[in-house]
Image (cartoon, rainbow, N blue to C red):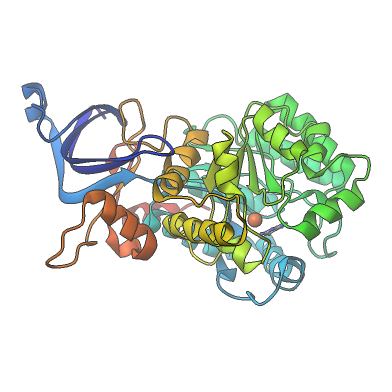
Length: 436
Ligand code: GUN
Ligand code: FE
């Protein structure tokens, strides 16, 4: 692919507390990776004059977003059934709908729309929940490969406390998972990878969790699941698993945290000392999903406290618990929720925009490699924001990005770059829908 030059303003999540802006920059990209960046007043070496240049003008280049917890299989549930709480919502809406993925035509129709929305909203890295169905997950994996997106994608597991039309036999579940891993580890681009996804402890038997734990060790895989999502969920897990200290202990003792891949836990709203110690020990990522935890009335993650303790916190839409595919909106909603938490709880610090933008980009991106910053050594996976200015009152690039997270949408994303290639969503989708 060689050298490519990109010009524009940059807003970069330098650290969880520092969001830097640089105007009129020149970015040198080699084979999809940022090689060097020259600020507006720095001289760009003459040798780069000859290279292919893409000039984004007044546009603001930011890292593409990483959605670290989303149920691709619940795409059609966004914004409906929201009057229910978690268990009613699962039983009345989610399980019947997810069961439909046994039909591969249905699966393809839904997953095509999911991929299109990821591309439109600038989410180029994603950690997904799917369904129990091997064929639908296999098709989705291959569609993701074709799309150019970065993803962790496998089948999910559930063998108890589930309706008889949507439940697995324990041995079959372990067998199918091992087969999925073996058939999707080699021979691909390296962008889409398997991970283990037990739905959550209340729908998984101990035998299933131990079987998956063996696979984690054997294939060095990561783990993605829900953890202490609500008081009711944590209490149910404890009731079903009295021999374990807590929700998190179940995953550790069954071996599910023994692999090398990332350990990614959605929600983590009521962590005990056991959970906090495990998160630290395994350098795990906790995923804050502000829309979903509000819709399901699960509670508010103590995100700032955990972050200030050095824990890794990223963001997720948790669609269909969440209702909107743009991960950027979670960056503003997380701030709103933290202000309410600060209002009601004295010793809670509110989050600021630098914190949540870092969660949405750099922290989330880190589980996919050197992704999530506009800095040398990072993959150039980026989007360009435009059209956030009012007439007669000028915002800085940083302010434009803040406004975008609060009130922008995919129409304000004027360019999309994956691995240093400017992509056209319709062209990508025309290839994705050819996959069978
Ligand atoms: N816990 C178990 N399954 C689910 C799910 O589909 N959504 C959410 N938000 N929580 C869960
Ligand atoms: Fe979820």
